[in-house]
Length: 300
Image (tube, rainbow, N blue to C red; front, top):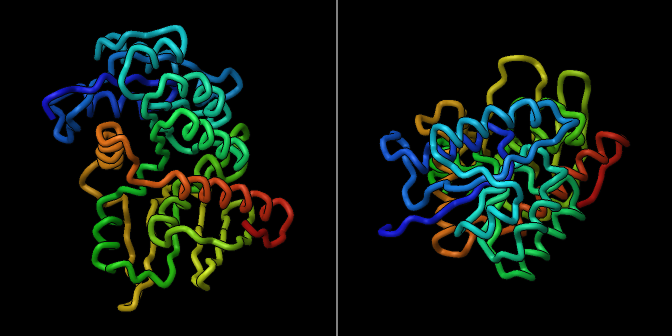
């Protein structure tokens, strides 16, 4: 890439912003992703969310002092000054509001997970993206874990089922499974594809198991744990038997693999991950939350 895209960040309350900025702005980094440079950012932060407001100051200072990023007072000011945007706010409640502010500038946008905290808000984001004709992508970095990508290639698309697992911490401001469940659900969808028909949840204080039934009869599960020392992974069921993929063993950081896909979207103007799949994932999480609350099977 001969040119360098000017990239802006909305929301400096997650470690993702320093990880992405280092990968883009530091050519000496072993996992450097070329083609763009973070030049501007809006701090944001949610006062009632400690994991947001308690971190925004430190990350803002690091971007300003270590990487020379210009800190601006509004999302609109950032959007006006760059070619592409990373909407990184840790609080999914503010994603729609912030996207409304930047969408009219017509710049491609990556929205860090989760896209939104309801299917209604997710669909409004999709409608705005269509209205302003801008590519939008949202994903957990685990979707692009090297071990998973390799295992799926070897399976050659013949996946008869999948069982994803990982930590399932709950965060009061991010209802139910939206906070950590998004990671394991993304692993499941990367393996199974779209087309889930219904979900049912069994849960107790330590564990949650979400069972999804797909339109073609395949079954996929998500097992979440709130016990310590849990890792992410997925068991793929193929015609040649089950294959366990422990994504924690990847040699390359998940964020770097994700950022490569994001930069492709920024340069090509088209997301490799269809937004329709992300919309179904948000609806899956919403239905799973409903099933957890009611004990009933819920149709998507």
